[in-house]
Amino acid sequence: MAKDNRRPLLPNRHPQANLFICDIADAVIKSDMASMEHPIFTLSKKPMREAKVYEHGDVRLEVTPSNKGIANIYDKDILIFAISQIMAAKNEGRPYAREIMFQARDFLEFSNRHTGGHDYDLLRDSLDRLDGTRLRTTIRTGGDETWEAFGLIDGAKIKRTRNDGRVTEWGLRLSEWLFKAIEANEVLTLHPDYFRLRKPIERRIYEIARKHCGAKESWQINLRKLQKKCGSSDATRNFRMAVRALCDFDHLPDYSVSIASDMVSFRSRTAALTTNLEYAANLRPETYDTARQAAPGWDVYVIEQEWRAWVSELLEQGMEPPRHADNAFIGFCRKWASRQ
Image (tube, rainbow, N blue to C red; front, top):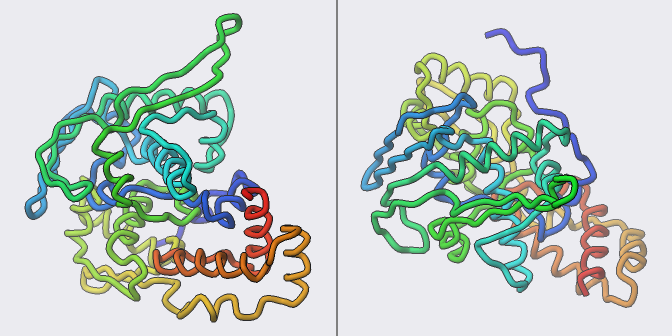
C-alpha cells in the first residue's frame, strides 16, 4: 500500500498549551472508560440520523439521534475537556459539579483545534449533537448495572452580551451517568497526541488499546472483533487497510501496532521504561539549583518525591512521561510553588 505523503499526525497548533498539559499533573487529558470500551460515538462527520445498536456479552447499547444526528468522535472532545477539568478539581480538593462553564478558546487550544470564527460555530454544533444524542444501555458506571435511558449531556448554554451579542461564556451539564463514572474514578489518562490523530478510526483504535492494553506489555485482538468494538461500518478490507496504515506509519500514541493473520497486536511503548527511578535517576546537579529558583523557600527534595510519584502514576496508566526529565521537574516545581 502506498503511503500518504502527509505526516501521519496533525501539527501541534498550540505548543505552549500542550507543554502545560504534558508537564503539569493537574492538566492531563482524561476520558471515561465506558465510552472508550464501547462504540457510543459515530466515526463519520456526516450526520447519522438512524439509531445504532451494539451488543457484546451482557452489554446492550442503543444510540438514538436527534435531527442533528448522533454525536461523533470529534464531539466527544468536549466531554474529554469537561472530564479533565472536573478530575483536576477533584484531585486538588477543589469544588466540582456536573455543570462546567468555560471559554471556547480554552477548549479549542486544549483539543489542538484552530481558533477562527468557523471553529466556534463547529463547537456550537457539537453541543447540539451531544445534547440530542440519547443512550439506552446496561453499561455499568460507578459499580451499578441498571438499564438506563439518558442523554450524553443534560443541556448546554451559550451566554452573550446584551449590547453586541458577543459570546462571553459556554457551558454544559454532564449526564448523571457520566458524572457517576467520574465520581468512581472510572477514567483513564490519554496521551496529548490523541488530538493530533487525523482519522476518526485512529482515535477509536487508540481508545480501545488504551482501555485494554493499558500499561501491560502487549495485548491482542481479532481484526473483526476490533472492528466491531470500533463501531466501524466500513468493509472489512478497508478496515484492515486502516490498521495496516497504523502499522506502517507507527504513529499511534503509547502503542506500536502489528497485524498477522488478522490478529492485531498492540505493544506498549513504555514497557521498556521499567521504573520511575530508571527514568529520572540522572537529574543534573544544576537542575536542583534551577528548581530552587522556581520554588523559592521550598525543599526541592520533598517536591522531587511528589514529582516521582506523579511520574510513577503516568507509567502505571500507560502514559509516556515528559521527554526531558530535568525540564519537567523544574516545571513541576514552578507549578508546586504557585499552588502553595
